[in-house]
Amino acid sequence: MELKGIKASIIHQCQIKPFIVKEEWAQAVANSKHGAIVLDDDYVNGVAKSIAHDIMMECNKPIYTMGLRDRTAGFFPTVDNLPPSSDEIVTKVLKIMENGR
Image (cartoon, rainbow, N blue to C red):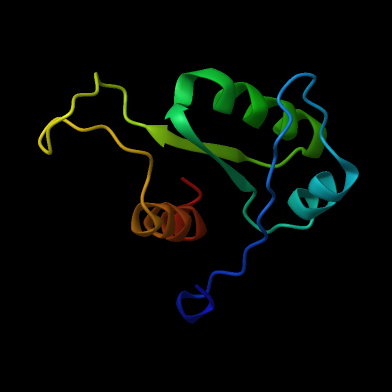
């Protein structure tokens, strides 16, 4: 990722309830240039958005979310609904770095 100008920290968050923003996470986000992304293997408008909001309020930085697309999933290649791929995540990060969204 550094070849594309991305310097990132990864936080593995395992506890959801109670959700507590750890000091090391807050420092990583506070020191970031562009904020953070909460990744989820479920729909964005659920836990991911709640966690992003809590981190944003704690750190006063933009927090984005990525997860399943807002559509029904199926079990066939044309209707499957999978979590974001590494390429999709890199594309989102580059877009945020360019214009903040």
